[in-house]
Image (cartoon, rainbow, N blue to C red; front, side, top):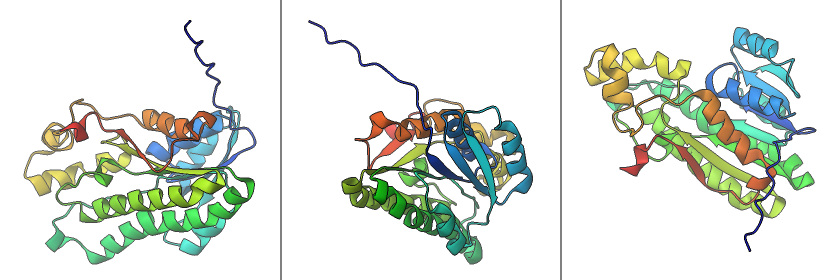
Amino acid sequence: MTAPHPTVTPLDLGGRTALVTGAASGIGRACALRLAAAGAKVRAVDRDVPGLDALAEAAPALAGAVEPHVLDLTDLDAAEQLAAGTDILVNNAGLQCVRPIEEFPPDVFHTVLTVMLEAPFRLIRGALPHMYAQRWGRIVNLSSVHGLRASAYKSAYVAAKHGLEGLSKTAALEGAPHGVTSNCVNPGYVRTPLVEAQIADQAEAHGVPPERVLADVLLKDSALKRLIEPAEVAEAVAYLCAPHASFITGTSLVLDGGWTAH
């Protein structure tokens, strides 16, 4: 006798508070809107004031609410304080610089590691007491295929994403007895301002015309020859926040179009 298929219930995050960094555009914006659509109250964090204003204008029709919070994540104390009381933490904010190591500006390297690794640590640190107290929490770290593979000329970004993978796994091990999961989502190249902004740098670093960067550099190792859309990444994030994902922790959900299948 065939067992009946389990009932799939819509994602309901009513009563939950989520914090999403880098929420003014790209993946972060898509995640904020997706979690708000599921009923969450979303703290949307970014330093881009016009982007946050546009996000807030797009959110009123959703089931949840979006609260804009203007914050530069290099203010680590403020980041940790803002994370207090959150049920869902999405560490998404990032920046990119494409240079050979011998030409890489040390101050930029420091800033990338601060925003993309130290700030997630401080945000997790701020969120965990509440999560532990209620014995439920979801930490989703937007890593990258570059958390699993390296590329030339991206020393800071690759180092930060590899570090984020380790931080996420450590949070998973510590959080497991308290009902808290921690996972990474690892997209390939996403159609975001961050990717579009690096095309000129990639062209210079690799010695190819800008119009060839997408095919010859960015998608060279991907079996699927297209950029992934922010909404696709947001669905993966939402999946990891659902009740049926409670046994998924300490792992990396790869959305790389077959890049790492090589």
